[in-house]
Length: 349
Image (cartoon, rainbow, N blue to C red; front, side, top):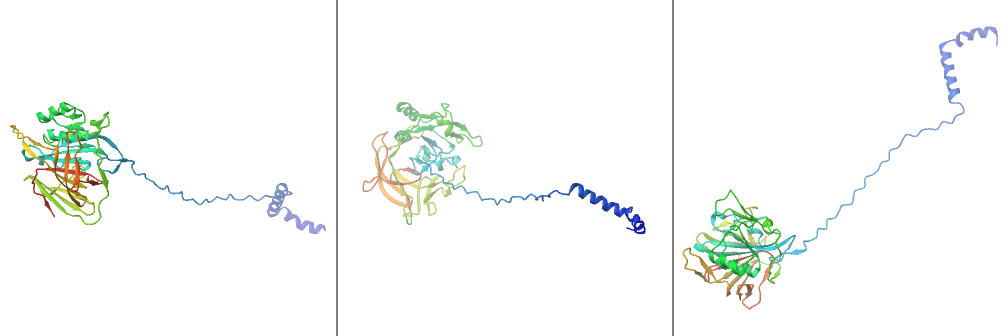
């Protein structure tokens, strides 16, 4: 290289641009030369498509127990208990009648009536108002071999309870389970909590070998049934096609349950005609003869049957037969037995 050319390059060699290029070259030589550069892959997110969990198929088992009073499957069966329930106007609406398997309505003194409600399957929490015992109801409690709940009773009834050894629960005696509803006036304010009353009690119940069937097909034989115990207690049943049951009315007003507010609905109605007589005491007590036999009419979820009833002794079961002597098969569901004086007019349409 000539001296003249070297002099021309000197300014460039000491210029900032040259120095920067030189520095870059040195860095590349020191750190990059001879090394294989491994490319770094960016992390890849795994995208997981959620798999829909298999839906659990609910296979709810039907309750295995059967209510011996109704023939229906139930979750729970308790020791059989019969409860005396008030039916004066001030006692309505009552609590627990809708859940009873069997209900009897029979006259008491002064043309008033009283209910005896039987509970076994899926009972309500409370029943009431609870009222006093009467002797003829005891024949029914005995045939069922049920615990008998009441608030006191007539002299004859209390005597027979002791004499016959009926397993009773009496509020007057201080038995547990009874409680007072302060929103109601005496004597229509005593109620019974069934769970407390039966706590620790042994199983009871002599259940009749009733046979149960499914509801009949077709239109009902009668859509309305009505009869009277007195001017203040006129009973009407109207058939519901949807429910296949009879809706209950008292004095033209729907008879409802106090807790649910729903109208009482009955699957089977029995009209049992039995002799009534006054005992002659100063309180106007009556006696109803439920031992023997007599006429009966049956309204079975729409089907009408004429027949008769028979009870051979105080502890014997009451049997119900059609006119040909065949035992009645009840439709699965509750049964109300209306005990009437012979000759009571019954309107059917």
